[in-house]
Image 1: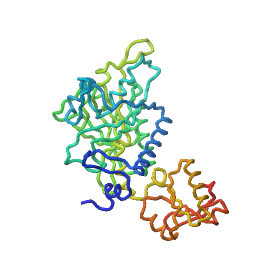
Image 2: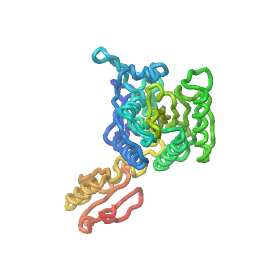
Image 3: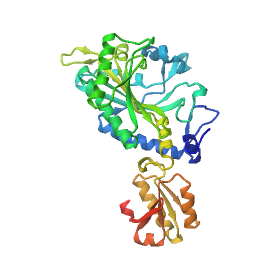
Image 4: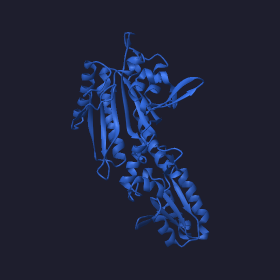
Amino acid sequence: MMNEFDHRVLGAKYDLFSFFEEGPGFPVWHEKGLRIKNALIEFWRKLHSESGYVEIQSPIMLDKELWKRSGHCDYFEENMYFSSVDKRDFAIKPMNCPGAILVFNQKKRSHAELPLRICELGHVHRHENSGSLHGLMRVRSFVQDDAHIFCNREQLLLEIKGVIRLIEKIMNQCGLKDYHFELSLRGGEKEYLGSDEDWAMAEGKLEEALRDLNYEVKKNPGEAKFYGPSLDLHLKDVHGRSWQCSSVQLDFNLPKRFNVHYFDEKGERQIPYMLHRAIYGSLERFIGILLENYGKDLPFWFHPVQYKILNIADESQEYSKQVASELRAKGFRIEIDLSDRPLKEKIRRSHDELVHSLLIIGKKEMESESVVVRRGDSQEVMKLKGL
């Protein structure tokens, strides 16, 4: 049974997203929900640009042979969707890895280009059993904030630690503090690609990065991906539930399978290592967690309605429109109420909506080129230029 803090209830109440019988597990984003998603993406892009990543966008559908070569069809086929075009079999991508490899391989690469950090906000599709679908937390279609870092062995440790620091920045920006890393290793009767030597080296590098950054090392034998071990961030939500979001995976198999190589200082071919990593993980799941953590009191920087303007005088209507226009030009997310309802009613209605702060404008504010900023029960007069 859903309670009032369930993200599905909040999504419907505040008109953020919908699910339809015509597409079970495939969320449809509404305008306000998309504002939240785009604000997270905008911050992500800025941070990745500053951190030396280049962004790409690979197609949603690629030849099935590519996915056979990568090993995804061997290990993941029951979770994949397929199509056929011109008597040729294609797979809808469940992951973004092959796209990054195609980009790396499309020209001759020098050692001077490493580490090469390729990031992508990839729209992926995975078949989940209908019984496991759960709002935004478990969907069949989502955006994954992937990146693939190609580097040599000497660069591995620094790159892994760089990813962990990037994770810390994003979690801190989103106000999320209750998380820990788990080291997923080989184990059990699963089949894994690669040699024992490769696995020992990869597991050792991930553990060393955790220790260097003073994290507790919690090991999970048998939880590694088929192509390499990983560091997985487990985030605890406001209900005490744990969700896996960020992941750093060290892969020494796909570069060999796809003949990925660069030329070293001597002009000799070398195979790079490949780090797969996501930070939000699934943007859909991450937003679901944020909604349940914050409810309507989302942080200002990604709130879908940062300011709602309440005009309270006929004389100030044009000024209210001017304020809205100027604030939108500055990048703020704005709504405006020009109705003739009493101020108390406008404020009461706004308290039931998904709004961060109110800007109250009347004749006095128009004449002084100011606004009354109201947040909860507190308010202050500010000059328009001060917003």
